[in-house]
Amino acid sequence: SNDAFALIGHHNDPLFGNTQSSFYSRFNNPGIQELSNATKFDSIELILKTGKHNYGDSMQPFTVVVSRLAESIANDDDMFYNNTEFATDGKVMGTATKILRPSADDSLSIPLDKAFGLELFSLIKAKATQVSSSDRFVEYFKGIRIQTDSLTTAQVVGFQKNMTIRLHYHEDDGNIIQKHIDLGSAASPYQFNHIDR
Image (cartoon, rainbow, N blue to C red; front, side, top):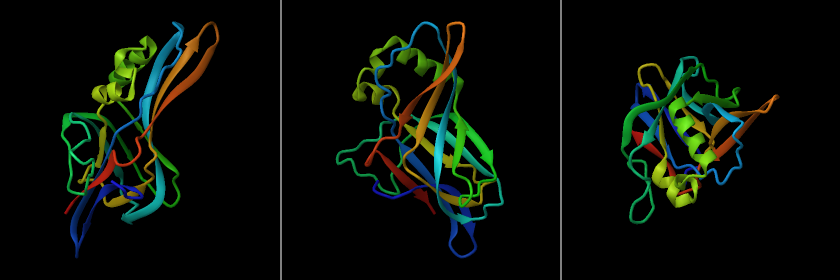
């Protein structure tokens, strides 16, 4: 949980065999937001910033799959290792496929489930209990697992650990004003790499 990068991807090396790396992270409470009745939800996305590091073939499609956690990232000593894992709810929360060139591309955007985005927006707008504190928010949204499709992905990419879930909305009081709310990823130790060989 103290790694410098989020390692995400899959690579099959003739000498070292298969390596599958996924990343787990909590996200911070968006806090109290003053949203008027004129605001409307638009979309939600996960933004990953590349760390300019990769291992494998960057000419192959890079397919990212995001899943929502069903378990909190927590144990007795809050220490997580590359063999630690937590259960997801079994549904795909978001996916994106791109020819990703880590040395040239700055970021990767993954559209997330609109139903989740609308629910989260409604909770923020209503100043609901689920977003009233960090502890309540973690109970509601335990975090995510980011992994890749091993059938199409042929590289492991190092992303920066400061990830963002960005909720897009607009105000319509005669003029459309585009706005957004950012949820930053939690600090260590509540994010870590899981690696399978």
